[in-house]
Length: 314
Ligand SMILES: NC(=O)c1ccc[n+]([C@@H]2O[C@H](COP(=O)([O-])OP(=O)(O)OC[C@H]3O[C@@H](n4cnc5c(N)ncnc54)[C@H](O)[C@@H]3O)[C@@H](O)[C@H]2O)c1
Image (cartoon, rainbow, N blue to C red; front, top):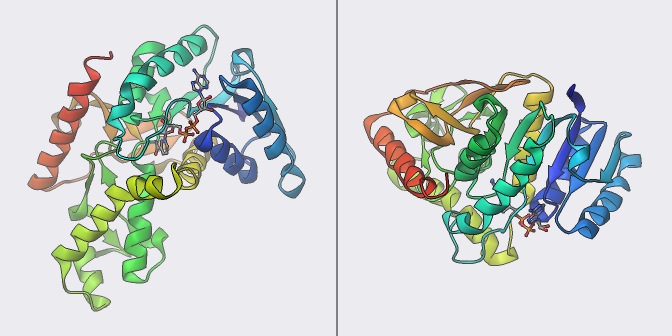
């Protein structure tokens, strides 16, 4: 089936799916959006509600549909599945969500779908690997939102700390989207300056302590938000919009999406986040940024944690 680059499908219309659909409606990237949920009334209600914003944005068709509606979509965003409850880790969700992912990808695979799968449900790295194996699609077409959100949080917090536009912060969170993720501090630059140099320009000299605090804030964000409002969804909705934008506009943007490692840093058969060039083909090229020895060890530990859990579900 020919891909319609103006069409997106969102499977799972809970907090994350509906917020992502809302962000996508406002983005003007698509002229058609189909919403699918196991709870069909939910998908219908979200389609109605989000459509009522169209006259304030740009014309498009938004409707609740079924799997026959997804074949010509450029991107299918999958957000279906259980979310974290307080005190639950993302990895705890695997039992519930692996089965859901397999059934959804099974339905997609029955159709002649030629677009890109963007996995958002958690644990996103393992579910992306499951989607990759179940679909049999080439790995460039099966992407996880990975640490795009965590990197957004990192840039925001660094921007606040340094009183600078977070878009001028070039820094990545890599590895698992979860507890074993790490900040690639050695590679971080703000307007071309190393982080410590920029900190000193702003009168901050307690580097170790600030770096620890900022990273812990990033890593614990989801727990902090879930404790207060039971789910996180606006940040991830913007991350989904940003990834779709890079794909649909063939931007070749470098984003830390999660993708299959094929020898980078000696890693294989594991999906995790390393910055990658994202274009209309999906993950066009993984960019193995330089890491110091400590970061490399942490990345390998993160990969081992993911591999250990994934082996029971692949
Ligand atoms: N990757 C990220 O950065 C990130 C950020 C936030 C949340 N998440 C994850 O996104 C997922 C969704 O979170 P949420 O808060 O929207 O949860 P939610 O419970 O509000 O929504 C989940 C939706 O999935 C639907 N669903 C369940 N099984 C389905 C199936 N087989 N087919 C179609 N729909 C199905 C449910 O009916 C529900 O509407 C969770 O796994 C959560 O952990 C990921």
